[in-house]
Image (cartoon, rainbow over all chains, first blue to last red; front, side, top):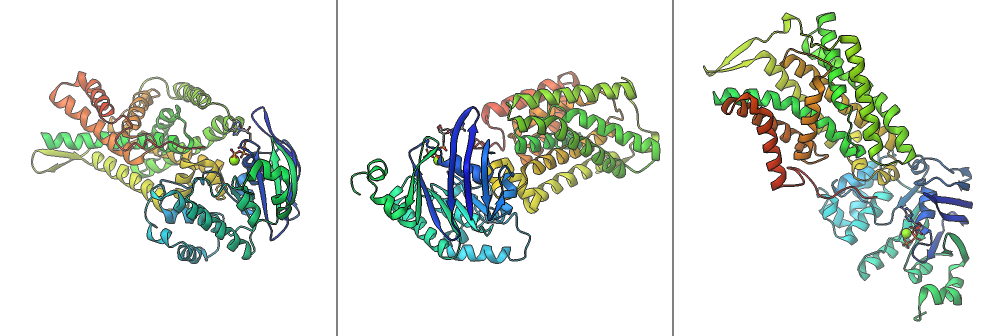
Length: 235
Length: 293
Ligand SMILES: Nc1ncnc2c1ncn2[C@@H]1O[C@H](COP(=O)(O)OP(=O)(O)OP(=O)(O)O)[C@@H](O)[C@H]1O
Ligand SMILES: [Mg+2]
């Protein structure tokens, strides 16, 4: 479904992706883990079109999407929930959901909003309030709901559990499983490597702009290098 | 006497509010100050003047024509002076300089075409007065200025609050990258903001030209400075703040003329603006929360 071939990208003069290749098969959850500053966010932003790769290719459903603008990639069926969620704080909860459907022109938008509010009742309760008033966990639910409004086939999640209480983290991972069951393919970036490897079938480990390691998640979980660097003693 | 001043103040304030709304729209969505706005306002005034003298059309049609012309100018400004710089990812000072360049160009162009002296509207649009409650006079012109300003500000508010474009404008104002992720074409929305702001400026130009019955290449300068002062006082990026600040400035000026003397007009007005900033540094409707990312 998604394939990156030797993608290189820069922030200013800094080479943040030094030629990475990875694949997300249709219907899969794939995770990308790595230390702070490894380039995980940079990789997602390159896929979503927020930064243009300097070289390499990005293919989505067989089509070359390298260098397309952000909005064009969204319209093709890829949605990213960025690091820090990036909800529209001054807009109402409902308007945030409407923005999620911005690229759609069909008549089922109102129905989908109702469905998402059904799934996340707190959003219904707060529908008219500025989204900035929601708690961190609620904002993450809104960010997920907003992303779903685009009816993505591939969802890019950048540290969805960041800054959340344990209960909200569990909820986020539960939702990831649920979405995947509904057929959404997912590329998940996480600091919480243990949980990320649990929900995914395949994993990549990034180190300073490169893919250092990859393999089936179950195998990575037991790999001594991964255990030492990302899973700590408890593994 | 007092109510007469209120009406005069509201009329002046309404045009300030329109000019300031244009600055604030561009600042809110693009995070730049469009230094060419005042000259687009001036060109709008000339378009209105040419329409009235050339075709004898009614005021509303002249305003509509000026809005279309100024909007087109705004579109060209965005394509030629703002978008290329944005692509390069240069600092926020660069568009400040490029719009100053456009502003100087437009003023020189107007000087060349129309000459430096101010031009009057034909006598057919001279003010007619209506008497309200014995002592208070309101001219037809004042009614037109207040009515058109109010209609435009309300239309802007409704557009921002209710329409698809309005929501996209607010989303880009908060976070352009996140808006892009939603499928918003950020470049087009930014262009729309500059076009709308310029159209408002063009309308204000015609109304001010009518108000003082004078249109000149330099008429934008004072309005530009006041418009900028208003958005700082009203809260950068806030349309409500632009309207409140505009009306406040208009009222302050008129009351200063009436009770202190006309030579103190600008001084008193700016003292009030400074006082507001001392009390509330982020402006009347200012939000301290800036844009992220
Ligand atoms: N806006 C920026 N300008 C310049 N360099 C940046 C910028 N943002 C990040 N970087 C650098 O790019 C590299 C990759 O950053 P990236 O954000 O992709 O890391 P990450 O793996 O997502 O880290 P984290 O786990 O902290 O989110 C880092 O060295 C970082 O310092
Ligand atoms: Mg990151």
